Length: 256
Image (tube, rainbow, N blue to C red):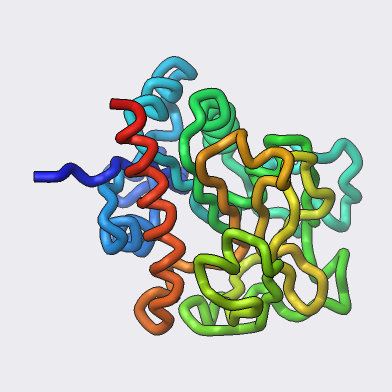
């Protein structure tokens, strides 16, 4: 029987979990369901592993999925966040931030396929030296409402895709409707990346490696929206996960 590619998934955390009210992992089941629907095998990672254990986890995995969740610590991307913006940033978990930064480091060192969703796109950009919009309504008052958690599995706004982008090739379109459940976004894009998806108000909705840096990884796609919540009503988004899993399967074969 052919084995499924093993996908390491970074979860959110909770200070008080359900079972014993202690520090716990938290993850929407939509992520592992999407991986499984694309013929991958989901593997949820602890956020408190040692650097050595994180490196080994990435080594054992065929690909990595960075998920959504709480805000990234502002000190990781700026030293001068005004008090009015600090009030808009939700409490961060330094353990999660650190573990994901280490995961990203290992992904690039070990050349593993990477899919980053929502917060995943943000921490990826920060990890490579980029910055974030700390609060879209405060910093971009003319922007559309991107925090539509009441419509988390519905189309909220359109996104323009670069014609030569991986995302455009996967979806077979130059424009697509997406959901929108975030208040932060990519600001200054880190040097290895280029924006390949942009909303009508200019918010960056997708990042890929620049043409000159595509050799860095066998697959890299970051999106600000949540495709895992759209695959049932809009099956074209399952193609995004299938493309990722195919890249992971190819990587696994080359490693044998």
